[in-house]
Image (cartoon, rainbow, N blue to C red; front, side):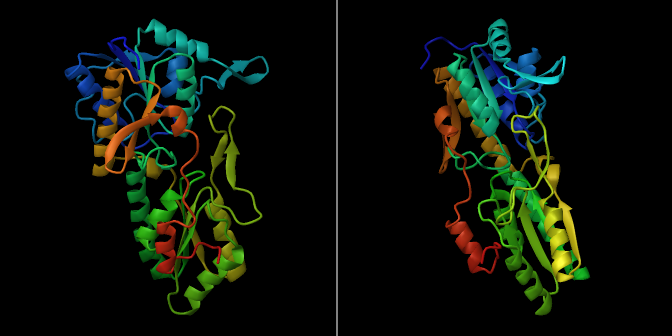
Length: 366
């Protein structure tokens, strides 16, 4: 608890973009300005802008009509970790600790609190800044839904809806051409999007990071469907899924990023193997950033607004070092240090997995 009256708060959106970011900004700014008379500062391009000193005061005009807009009016970056900051050196890119620059700007801008909207990486950075004495409140954002301290992150519902619609559309073209369709979705180390979109869309095989798959099981499944009259199959694969005794397929590594691993390629890898080993015509669809773009669903707009207004409530009360959180039907808060203690992964013996198996979904393991 901090007894100093909050007068000036900053907002930043960190990490990858996500549907609902603007709804949170609005959810913070409107009550902050209208109910509490606070000045709201928007920090541009996430922690990168915090390090580089880019900000602007937000007005009521800035936040008008943005609840349904995708992206973020403040910009974002997944390459701005102040404790792992890339700068041009004599020998190319060097990684330095630029956290003192963040502290300098925080003080120079006269801020009393920062509301950091982001996922796992943003929350880890926020926890370190809190330990430096910066008043900070976290808002959980990620389409991956992998923050354990909240039942759901905003952005997930929108990504799930997009992935489900894509699977629905693939059914018709797969059926028409009697093909195996492999669809690769995002999620990094968590399989929530693949699991729920695959189940909602009626995928025949769902491959997720939490369950290593066996090639012979996948091949047997698509062959069975091809020979018994179905004549097509849908395989939904999370980008972080991997076969037993194999490594995760990655597209590239980038030392400038908070997490240097850039996923991508597992869909094509599976598609090639199916064609080679079964002779079945196979095609790959990689949804990629489509899952992060466009307008948020009604659910995400409401959840994002609730998160934003709760963050302001915490700020006014001086309850810093906390992250807003959905528990059941209520929005509450948890200590940021507890929120980042572990990732929220799919429980392999959980009810959703069991339901999927009961309707005949194959996870490549049995």
